[in-house]
Length: 163
Image 1: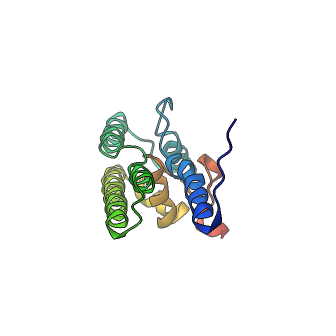
Image 2: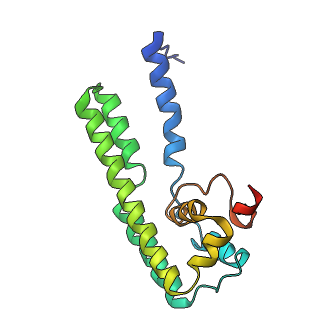
C-alpha cells in the first residue's frame, strides 16, 4: 500500500481544504428525507403560529424542489476542487469560486424571500419572528434547502428571550 506524503505548508493547506470539502457539501438536504417541512412545522407549533395549509405546503415544497435542482449540490465546492486539481490558484480560479458562491447565495436569498412571502400571507411569519428573532427565522428558511439552523434542529430552538 502506498502512502502519499505532502510536505511543507502547501501540502498542509491542501489537506485542510480537502478535509473541509465534505463539511461544506454536507449541508445539502438528503434525497431520502421524507418531509422537508418538518423543522418549519415544529417551529410554527413552538411559536403558536397557524399550521401550514395544504396549499402553503405544496407551494413551499415546490420552491424547495426548484431551488435544489437549480443549485447543484456543492457547486462552489466542485469549482474549488476543479481549481485545486488543475493547479489554478490564481485570480481566475478565485473569481470562478467567488462567482459560484455569490450565485448560490442569491438563489438562497430569493428562496427564503419567497417562503417568507408565503408565510406572511398565512399569518405565520410574525409569530415566528416574535418567538425566534429575524436571524433565526432566516436560518430556518434557508435550512429548508440545506444548510444549518444555527447548530440546532427542531423544537430545541432558542428564542431571543433566552439569550
